[in-house]
Length: 159
Image 1 (cartoon, helix red, strand yellow):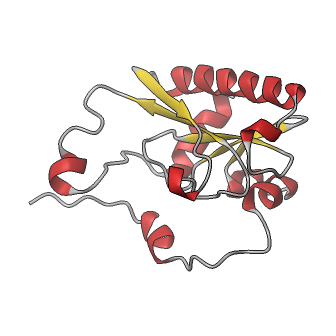
Image 2: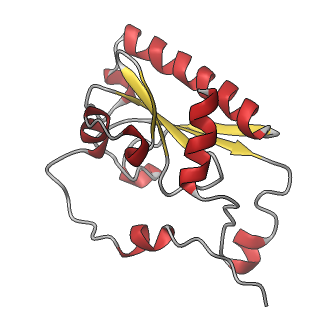
């Protein structure tokens, strides 16, 4: 039997799900600890952050700096910067990891799968042929082949 290791997931699994008064998407970019917080880029109105609990290696998020829950609340300038950062993220992921494709989208509201429903954000998830294979179906597990900190280091070089 093969053993799959994803030790960083345990923090997510066991973490208390209490409603916090603060917002990680508002707090993390303000700190000077970008590497610890996995912030890859800070723009004027948006930023890019690596997902600490990825669905796939290189899974990152493009987030407006302004705290709002709904995409329709974004103004035209914010939409433009978010779009540019999604494109820049794709270029960086292609250069660092050469994926075969991408899933790009956002989840608005808890019922739509939003883990952080009070601050809208885009997910950019690189994909490879066979990256999910049978594991999610048969083994009820995903395989992430690289530590998040190593992925951050590689992406920071090309971002």
